[in-house]
Image (cartoon, rainbow, N blue to C red; front, side, top):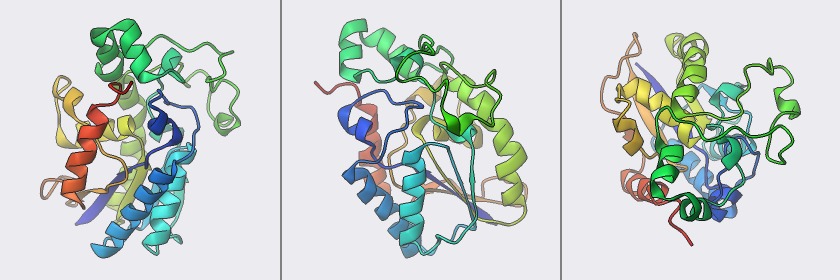
Length: 248
């Protein structure tokens, strides 16, 4: 049996400000740093020892992983980073205030952009200050495959091949794998692992900084239901995620 540990990055500066972030590279807030530390403490308390780490190319996920692994005494493990674990690209919404967007466009369009399975927001322009068109962290990626906006369905399209070809290989080699990533890239993976329908995935909210653990057999099938290492905090955190956009 192997373990897959999923950790959504701690609260970022833009989470705190209630802004659409997507691929914009922002840092953890002080609260987010504490959440990341708590994630590592939980791993240590529960004697969960990841053998390899996968993260996105975004600083908030990298910071979360570094802080958590430090607390868990696992800073020495190999690290692999990929843009395919990045957050969903929010297109022209990146940098916009969620509450103001809700007020301007109304609840139906806001929820469609935020939670629709296959309807992306409008594309971002290359000359936008929040575009990644010239971001050097993606110099090794064909620019034709880099998104200018995404729905969750498109996140799944670019994440699942990486899961199947790379991450799953580590699990099949008997390694316990930790993934430090983002709300929507992790929702995409959880949808696949838990076989959640396109309609039901809209109701799934993943809290920040609380490890979610899957125990998998030699065929990477679940041996039991996935569990959070702090279930009460996870429930409260998921409610906060669901309420985003309601702040004034």
